[in-house]
Length: 434
Ligand code: GUN
Ligand code: ZN
Image 1 (cartoon, protein in one colour):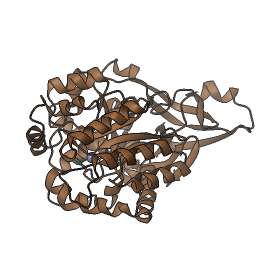
Image 2 (cartoon, helix red, strand yellow; image 1 turned 90 degrees about the horizontal axis):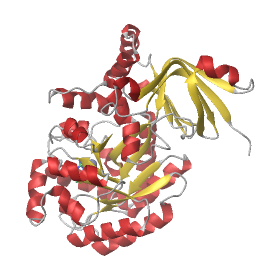
Image 3 (cartoon, protein in one colour; image 1 turned 90 degrees about the vertical axis):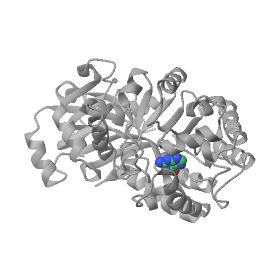
Image 4 (spheres, rainbow, N blue to C red; image 1 turned 120 degrees about the vertical axis):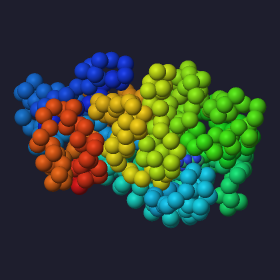
């Protein structure tokens, strides 16, 4: 095999620890004039150009970016493929919004051609925004996941997805049965889980749309295969929380429904968690489960303010989710912009380095993939983004006033969006160029 070696020179920053757990200076590495060496899809060195350039063989190509910042590819720990075409739908909160807008568009994914068309648009949109890994809800139809993985595999992306399981409290045209959801999920696991950089996630939509029989079979899948993911929604909206109490009166709280069916664990990601109590956070931490914090969605659907400090107190892993189409942007930068405001409204702060952590290493930790993605350490996969300081006239002018990396990061996260991401690389291959 021939070696494919290349080096990238720019300002480079990456998150190496959670700022909630170490002094902030120990949470990141920054190289103002940095060099990152990539060989066969992996990072083999990162550091100051002055230390690394001289050691590089003279025939190795060095790609230089001016006024740009390289960091690890962004990680979106909660997003819905079939909702791409209804993002920005007016006027409702969660339960009415699902009935009015979501279920009708998800119905279309029974058609493989439609699923393939949207998968293509969806993946392009992720990459345009610098997102190199996502934990993705398909629709109830296994065709949706086949289409998504087929498209992701072509680009050798590290992606996780699953077919939605939902056997009640939804239109007849969209429900499966406990048995069919088990069989369909199993077929997808056999076909895709562990193929290349792809992983499967068992995906019960949320407690109200699954019978106890279905949740029990979801738990059974988790024990039948090693390293499967589990994704679902929890405690997003107060009416939803009340409904879960009515449907499962014997369980102590919302999380306990999932716990009862053996759906908690190190690869389990619960979206939202806006209205969780201390006891639930404690149990999430104890089981190594993670929360996907989805600020644009929580604002858009009027769901509430996620209590990040509470999750931190309990040492729960937290990643960031766009939750498109409840969320309003594919951009992790825009998602951070809104996350900052969620903290402000609670009298708390979200530092630029905590934001960087949430967007990269925190997401990787939530997914137990920090040895592969979410940072730029030697040996990790070369999934990274190049952010252009001159992406817009205002950004360009504002960045000229910024002196520290902290300030630069904050401006990128506040003013930045898809335009800011000039290039996206996956396993060392350029997969998006603006
Ligand atoms: N809860 C159950 N299904 C959904 C969904 O599709 N989006 C959001 N935001 N919450 C949900
Ligand atoms: Zn969601």
